[in-house]
Image 1 (cartoon, helix red, strand yellow):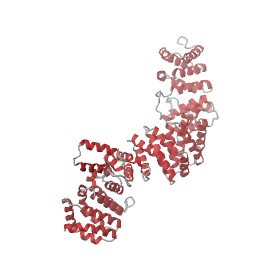
Image 2 (tube, rainbow, N blue to C red):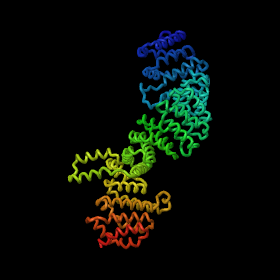
Image 3 (cartoon, rainbow, N blue to C red):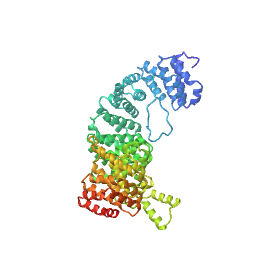
Image 4 (tube, helix red, strand yellow):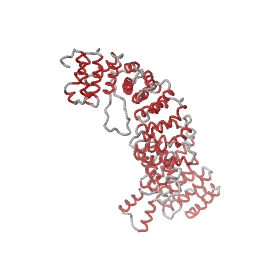
Amino acid sequence: MEEHLKAVEVQACAVSALGAFVLRGAHRKSMVESRGPQLLLEAMRQHPSSEPVQEKGANALRLLVKDSPEAQALLLKLGAAEVLVHICQVHLPSLGALSAALHALSVLSRPWRAEQPEPWSFAEVPAKTPSCCKPEILLATLQRCPESNSILEPGLTLLWGYLAKEPSASSVECARSATAALRVPTASAQTLAAAGGVLCVTGAEAVESPGAVVKLLLKAQMAHPDQRMLQERAWEAVLMLLRASESLDEVQGKLLRHLVQAMMQHQGPLQWIGCDIMTLLCLPDAPNAAEHRQLLMQLEAPRLVAEAMKKNLPVPEMQDSGCATLQCLALDQVNEGELEQLEDVTVEALLLSLEAQPHFQAAQTRALDLLSSFAQHARWTLARPRAAELAVAALKRHAEDATLVEIACRLLWRLLEGEVSEPMDRIACTLLDLLDEAPSLSTRTFLLHLAKRSDDVATRVLAANGAQPAAEAAAPPLLSLQLMERLAQRRSLRPALRRVGELWRKLQEALSTAEDDEGAARTPTPISLCVCGCALLGRLACDGEAAAAQASVELERLMKQIEASDDVELQSWGFLALQNLLCGSTSDAQLRRHTAVRLQLASELRRAVGPAEAQRRVSLASVFFREAA
């Protein structure tokens, strides 16, 4: 090849022989070391108009690069891409030379991946198309042979790779070429997958008839159900078109059935792409959303989504998309059987998602929100303590996220609802009192391990040090007070007693906001806040002398709240809180009673008495006023 560089026939035979050597197993490393790539490119540059040299040279180059990242890097460095692009421009009428050049460019642009890629990665990624391979050149080659797989497959693959890294002004023409390829009856699965990839990167605005293209994509998927690469890119294109178009109602029912079948058959990105499509069609404002949710429930989509989440725990996209889909499927589920079905198959997946993605706020928010809606039904008893721990962990980790904080507090509030066993710390204190010994470090450690495995929600909240972050959470005032009241009722608020005064200040700030016209629509009514605040003080006053001492500073403010309203529930809870604050034989309790006399609370109470329940509370509290007087 070196001695007869100008002899076109010799060079044609030489490059053909070079390709044959590689095809028959010649060692590529020795071929590279003997300057095979340099001589090959030199022959092609020396005879640019010779069709045999260009076609056989492109074939030899493709064989040399195949399965050899070293040869690929060397040929790119030597300018092989420019030589191949020149063939596409000069030898456009020659189908053989054109096909050889496109296939060689496709192999030369193929990104090298790990031998065993992650199971959740795409089966095929866009090519690293050289910048010299412009869309205009590729479109001309595609139009030259619009029904030949030998042209369509490498041409669309290169076009997809170029558009994926650099937008083009000819996006509409690119989308037209991809759509035309979908209509070819003999198109291969690789050609159809590349067409789907082109549509994904051109965007929905470049597609002229979204409904017709979706039908073509569905047809391609049904023709090749086992081709994972095609399924992934076709469904990705469908998702892109659905997001941009509202006139695809006629294909959505059929689409969902095929989607569920594809998700059952193929793992990987198709799982979260499918979840995104389900979510899009089941959103409350989506056309026929109720019918779509009903259909997906019949197809057991919740179980499919939950299993996909469990198998792809390290993938944030899968967890976020799966939680979003389950949220949409839970909407309007008034049928008790369907709701039970949804809970049974999804609760474990949601808990695993919270554990696997602790730093991904979107997935945490969605999973906690769905668990909060399920917590209203006392079915998944065994998982409730675990859910409480995860909610506390989310509160600690994402305290700055107001939405997540509110959802986590609501979940804790609902988990603490209902009749449950006594908290472990109360049992431990009782046992230690009977033994007449102070708890040693080993005893406390043992009891802490017991508490961390308790089936009681309040005990698990205590063991996870959850009272403090729950008290400090920036949740809405009413929800925060409701949660504190429920924790106090369960004797689980002691670690956060120093926050009681701040909670009352929150109450006062909320009341001030509620009186403002602009904030009235966003803030709960003053009555509901006062009732909950008084209930909290009443619970705290029953929780030992330490809690009562913290709450006693609010006697005067509490009385003002009672006087300011004639609401029966508010008066009843307020008087109960006063009664509990004034009970006791310690010096602190006596001091509070003297404070009550100084504030003339006895006469104020009598004047405020109206309803029978309030009368009963006043009569109980008056005993302590007489003693103090």
